[in-house]
Image (cartoon, rainbow, N blue to C red; front, side):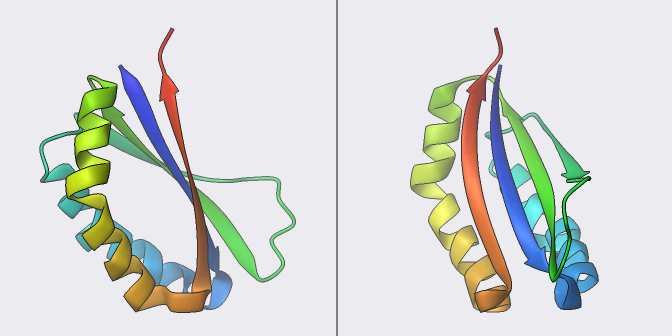
Length: 100
């Protein structure tokens, strides 16, 4: 099992709208690829929130190959949607982890 983690920092002024959009549009699009078996969302705690807050989106796949298929064939269009909708309101970083 592998975990594809995407941590996104989002400006507080769009947080609720963005989180709703992520749950109703973005995540269903990711899951509809059929490459991930499950997902979880976590809000990052204990940070000096200031003008933004961070969330961790965790997608679980059976293999690295499935994540690579997602990154090659689906992620570019989905990431572009996020950028188009929330331009300078977010920052993201990605991590791929393997269960041991």
